[in-house]
Amino acid sequence: MAVKSNLLNMSLMLTLTCLVCSAILGGAYVITKDPIDAAKAAKTNKAVSAVLPLFDDAQKGETALRDEASGEEKPYVYYKAVKDDELVGYAIESSVSGFGGELKVLVGFTPDGKIFDTDVLVNNETPGLGAKCAESESVFRRQWKGFDPKVKMLSVKKEGGDIDAITASTITSKAYTQAVYNAVQVFDALNGEAADAATGVSVHPKEGGQSNE
Amino acid sequence: MSKLKLLTDGFIKNNPTFVLLLGMCPTLATTTSAVNGLSMGLATLFVLVLSNIVISLIAPVTPDKVHIPVYIVVIASFVTLLQFIMQAYTPSMYETLGLFIPLIVVNCIVLGRAEAFASKNGVWASTLDGIGVGLGFTLSLTVLGAVREMLGSGSIFGWKFITGDGMLAFVMAPGAFLCLGYLMVLFNKIAKK
Image (cartoon, rainbow over all chains, first blue to last red; front, side):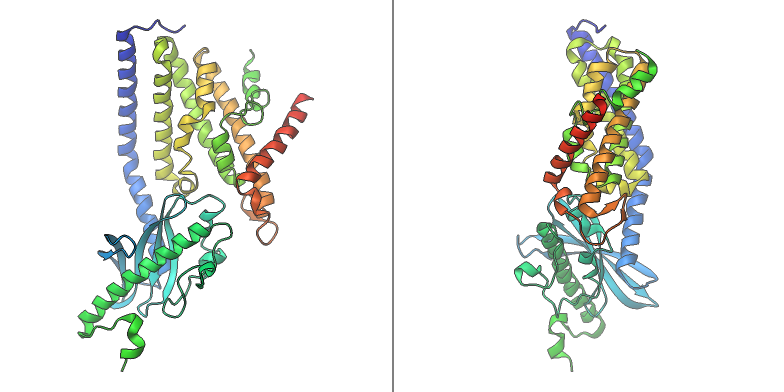
């Protein structure tokens, strides 16, 4: 059945196969590119509306913050949501490495610095275990609603904080907490700038209690 | 060989999971729930049928020494195609299975059927073989996923029948091996009769 091999027909067959396959894949890429982008955008939009109170318009912005652990500048994408020209909150994308790869969390803040809600944008955690962090109705996820990082400790209970970890998924839970922690830092930076711009007085949210007169 | 036998062979006599023990990596990793098992099975079915068809067509003109690279390129292309399609039209399914889809390329069932069957048989027979083995794989993964989901999370196809967590071990790797072992015994017992 099979043809006897010689250099010519081997190289010919391999070249031909690769050419045809790459042509097909190239075509498929072009055809599916728009739906894929649309699906990703729809997911982000849905997530932004899920983590913030009702808003009319959300502006996308980008900022950078020095990472505490590595000391490098890390870019963050955020969405500033307004309703009737009034700020209703920020949603900040925060990416960390979880148990199985990138874990990207969207954290929504109300202007007073409380977390409104969180959502998962990208997760490569173990299905059935760490991937539970993507189930919005799980106990782990519900505890973020209304979480006030000024009052409560942002670390898992095992380490003396206030976050209930997912059973058997401590690494995922810690990564998630780290992502939220980073987002809090970004929010503080953003909110600081906003306060500067609005009143000329810099009120750092964490020191708000003292300088508030 | 009769056409019907080609189909049913994949289910029982050549059942990839419980008899041939092929493709254990995705089997153990994705069957944390019945839905995941079912989707993984169907994704493999898609690749298996299409690659069987193409390989049975090109096998007569493929030089012997390069047949494995040629088959792998064909299989990898179909897997990538599947990945694009899933990302575009079923993004939520891609979320859960994304990690395991590229692994279909190295799933021994696909290359195994290409080598053992499609390269020696006609298009029609290879299609039936692909469907048979693919459905057999889907069935095994769904059953394994259902059992693990019932014991591990107390639900079936996402529908919860007990409150609380269930026996978590069954969602993790040890439970996968345990369930697989017992199901294999059960399956071979029934199949031998």
